[in-house]
Length: 89
Image (cartoon, rainbow, N blue to C red; front, top):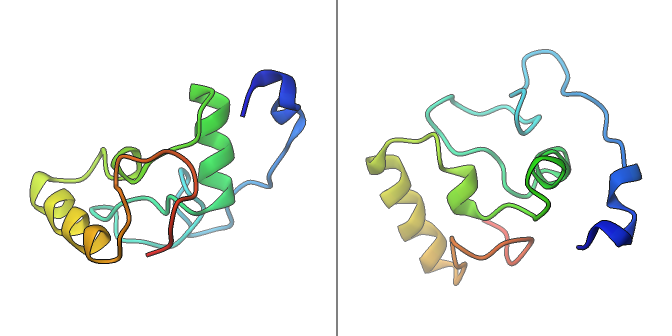
């Protein structure tokens, strides 16, 4: 989406207690953020002016974890480098 699309006015509530402060879901710190979380998508968009890819969501993970997730995503026909909502895990 472009800046002119009005995305700058969208506000999403902060994550609840015990939730990841980046994606607002519960996950192991070594696991990827939830790329499909609205909180993550809008936070990422706010900071980068584009929607995240699964590669972005996995950026903090070890190479072993990223490789496993790329394989799982590929089996489901999801391009881990595609931005925005392109498929669900």
